[in-house]
Amino acid sequence: MPARVAALDASSLSAAGRHGPAKHDYIHWLRTRLLASVKSRALMEDSGMARRMRDKDFRDDQWARRYTGRVERINRFIDELGAKDGTGHPPYIPPMCGGADALALSISRDPGPKAGGTKGSGFLSIENDDPSAERMGQFLAEAGIDYAEVVPWNAYPWYINSDPTTDQLRAGVEPLRDLIGLMPRLRVVLVHGTAAGKAGSFSCVRTTT
Image (cartoon, rainbow, N blue to C red; front, top):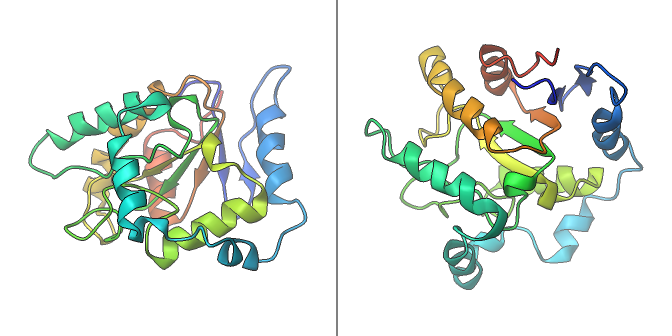
């Protein structure tokens, strides 16, 4: 893990600091948003913007733009992962997220059925038609974190829709390291849940010295 990256457990808000003059800059960037005055959960519900992937026109637009702008490099990398070992094709990151220019990486367990699988959107997106994606969107909105500064990822990036085994989590380490290499501005890693935490420990996500 490059020294520039700081890790943050979203459930506890505990952070691994960085060394040097800018030690707390990016931790402060995220912490201020996480601890700011929390808006009502109705913010996302009333906006009419949650679960937009269920709309075919929106989904088709995201699909058509998956190789454009700041998400192109990462989605080409995801294609490379999809060509390996018959494990399937991981969901893409959506054009609405931060892509290679993002400051934050958000790691969950594995893609859900509304992301991967035969009925999935094909994207890791807060706009997917499922409760977990909606909750993540609410979390980011309430914390004032701009999704355009975030890349979503999974400890095991391929679709299994179950708790990854230790071997599967270890298999997700190299893709995670490669992904980080594609994100030169990355400063903060959000780790959601036990499986993602294990993946972080395997890949030294928490080591920032």
